[in-house]
Image 1 (cartoon, rainbow, N blue to C red):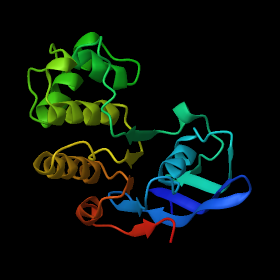
Image 2: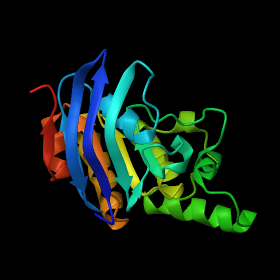
Image 3: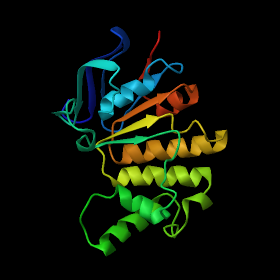
Image 4: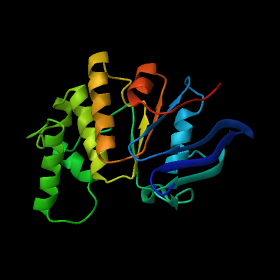
Length: 211
């Protein structure tokens, strides 16, 4: 598969015993959902894809992204974006400065500011650049975290239960926003969750670990 994310014969072992087995292609704009209870290896799989697997695990197989084998690449070279349960905004930076952190180097100050303003407008936060992150609601923080990650121009999106701390109404809204943005940018998405509603909203293939 030239475009998209490909997990090829991936096996992750802990103390010699297989914890995770996955072989799957995720096409641009599609979502692969990985489900299972806590401790079954969902976040461990994401760590393997991002190149941050802890040393007490051993992995076999390969990760391909847009036709390139990235299995041995350094984490910062992989062009993989990730969203976590927590928004992880920098509390000492304004909303705009948080977004600037996601931008690739280069460009004039005016060009960078224009990209930040456009990103905020895209998610209904026009004029929020000077705001302190502590003044934002949970949903607003989730939107800023999403756009900061997208401004880094990833080629794939990983979701580590990013909706789990939101209330039901907000969860559905943010979830739809994330999936819509991923489809619009033709990003393959790997979602880990224990929530059946997340999996249903994703609309793609589902792998259940621990079966």
